[in-house]
Image (cartoon, rainbow, N blue to C red; front, top):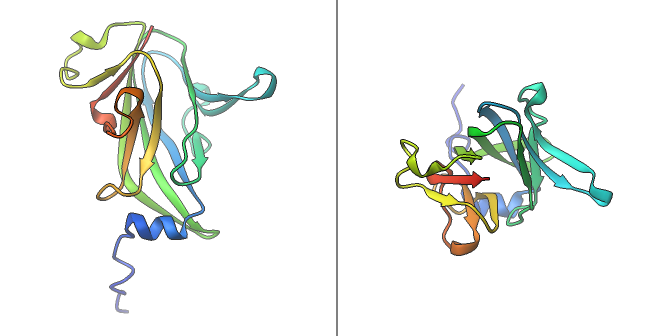
Length: 167
């Protein structure tokens, strides 16, 4: 049986935007000295967890958004130290079709410690205040998981170069 040339071609960002239903960012790995949580605060202060490592990592550790949207996640950690969370991104094209469109992206958190002296973080962008959004960029070549932050709202930072400091 001969393979279709069209089936082997990756969809472009514009193609995915025209046919998409939502984008899903899924945590696939979390390393650190304790538990990590990503959540939204709902009505009356109740947390709605997108990522909760207390029970391990699985397909439930995800958040869904319409393309070009963002959400204001809060992050919590049970112990100080270095954490690294890896995310995959996919697009739901229709009810039966999901397309992975970006290489996994890692977000690093320095919790309760100074990230300035950490080996490998010399050229990283350190965020220690303000606002930052984890997002999926359909227009980047091959797709990309990025962090957009206050000071450079139009200039995304790739997660491999971003440290988020929490104190």
